[in-house]
Image (cartoon, rainbow, N blue to C red; front, side):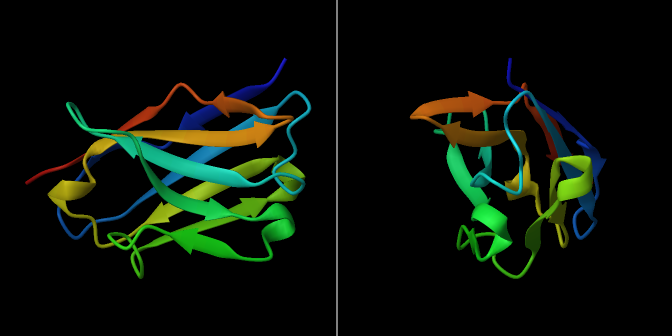
Length: 117
């Protein structure tokens, strides 16, 4: 079975940084799939934050996080990361790791990020 397990969330001050990790298991290989990070705040729709293409050839980011967040992989560890810098309270949400294989969406359990003074 496929598992995507996020970690690294927590409390950060405005202007601070966090690094989220997503460890994939089962048949998902982060170097062979498009990997994405989404986030969802209470009462709001889930939104795409960042994506990395197969093999890491390119990356895409939501306008709200461009220049602040970076998505990258460590293929040996089968892990995709989201480095978040210059955090703001608007970044507060549950962050989810995602991948699609054979038309099926796979999701992690989510990790809470709270940015507050």
